[in-house]
Length: 409
Image (cartoon, rainbow, N blue to C red):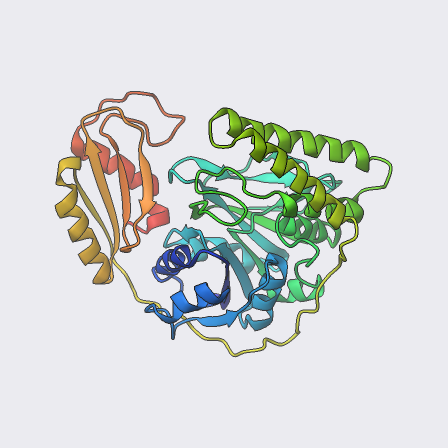
């Protein structure tokens, strides 16, 4: 079967190390025809130019703090039939792109969204959801094993996340891309609602998995405590003006503000913020909302023809291998994993201790996947707290759990 050409857009700002980590993950994708477009600030551009990826990607400099404008620039340069999006602090499973765009074989599918694992590499950060024109989301039940195609009806749109989604390029052109009024936050929600209004179908693809690291940025610290809420406030003001009648806006904003205050107070209670930080953050939220009431909103001009030719990322046929051992063997096994990854393998390393410790998964910058935890502990968080395994049984169980995503035969 012929696969459509895909342009993968990565927007990066203030996170050059995370960007290289993301590109390392993208380099292991097993998909026959894709390009990578990096829209980055000067530190990000410098990091890419000094990396092995310098000649493999389309690198476009962009130094404004507006993710919608940056994504639109990426779409303008995209020469693929489909444009996929991933954040610079995220890394995909090797099968991600194959799984994500498979539903595009149906002509009625305009957009696709995958599932996102959080920082521990196990728990779900986002799964299937819908969203309405107040921005309220609701969980959606879909099959965990196959793509589900949904044509929204009524007031609710199908929610996709900006760190793991794809849209047909011609649809993005028709919808005028991302609204630059959303400099950060609610940008993909706005696109979801416009897809609904236009009657397009969206496919939700559980096996198209991305691991989201939530790296530090000017808006949040590495412990996820917020540094600034200005853009959240401004985006909510733009969103209200675009989707809500004027009468309910005041109560809606009060509800949003209460939610944000509760969130920052929880960080303060946990010792991550001081009382003065709470006052500052709430002031910035209000300032952003006031600015958003005056901010220009609307679509962008996306060129019908791409601004640059398709630049195929070199795809190396990789074997997926599993290494496993005890935690006290980690130094030797990590060195072996890194060496096998340099040799072109997709490497999964299991390190088990004789405990009931919860498992975590991370993609190492050296290019291999590492899963650590107790031999008798939980990986899937809904599983039993304790379960008896032999070492070989646990390796086999975890291999089955991630086999399709990691392309383990």
